[in-house]
Length: 273
Image (cartoon, rainbow, N blue to C red; front, side, top):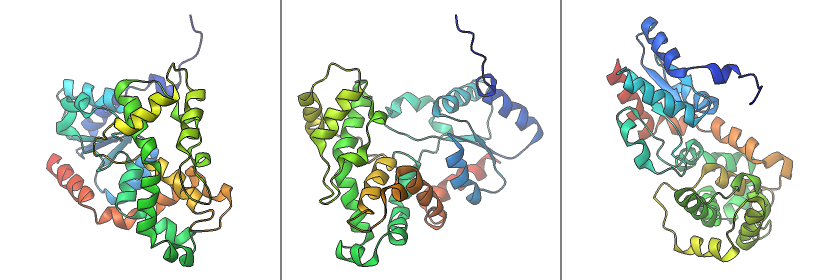
């Protein structure tokens, strides 16, 4: 029996908090996965009450409870990640998913990573590489085998510990090629799995993706490697994933404000009022 004291977050019932809030406010509610979503979206959303939940599972639990109570005037946004979308079919009427796999991937699609590369990289090196948009395409191609493995891992519940492997360390600094076999070996070593190298190589060759593209932070990991030599000359500590994620969020304002995704979100929120 555990003697651990529950945290305030454990005790918080988000659905009940939103229900009580709606008794005092007529504004539409938007439930978000976390504080990063709030920081990026809040400047674009006026007369909307934002509720960052602190995790996808907490969002899903709250949304299903609110639907069971038949409470309206709310929408929710979470990262699609690599989840089977059919499992959220019962919540589709109140959802507004990002246009790509996650918030960062959508920002990349909207051109925010191009802005980051142009600000942090060398204009001469970027021009020699064909421009920032071409570099982003190359980065996405570089990490595509990892995307496929992530999709396969989630779909078939293979239990691979991607979070324990540093993707950037498996990308060659000179050629910007992914050392895929080395990545797979590190992934197997970090995971409690009976899989072998051939299983992962076969999955990468035979699995078809679902059309949502790449995980945004994987592309940012590759961008960090590129900014150290191919398109820049920054030190490793200056281009880690967390720093580039912050830079991406800061660069997203104008592209997001002009996006079809944001326009459709505002239209949905307006209909809730």
